[in-house]
Image (tube, rainbow, N blue to C red):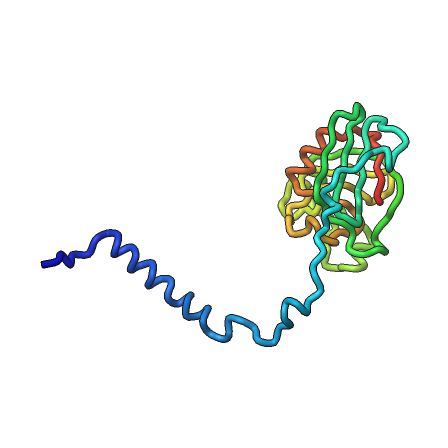
Length: 200
């Protein structure tokens, strides 16, 4: 005579099947899969942005290293950093301006650095979005500048962090270059005031 007593394994297996049943039923319903999508073979292939993660040579952008060089490649949404002694190179994904009208390209330099910077939107930013606050104190999670900022000699242009990690790798800023907070904190320690900057 067989022993029909339930074992722990059979109880766990039964519970898993019971919990999975609604999901399996939903997956089998016709609502789960769209019927009006074009076939994959008819879609335009997605181009991956491999250039964003290829090392570049500082000599292609700057005449000398000086105290360091920072390249913000807007097209590939990446920031490259070279130290003044040529021994340190860093590459980070970044956010870039929302549109070409908000984008400034050319050569600049770092003139100031700030930990937990406060944020005051410019008049043009408030004109585009009147709901913006007049000021956000530094250190707050809703501060768009994140935990560190490095100011360029162009007014209102910065390289800064962000608490909103969805922005990295996207066109999402009003002109600044944004980095993950952990990346901007690392870069902040490397970059000196006077570092050359190119927005390409």
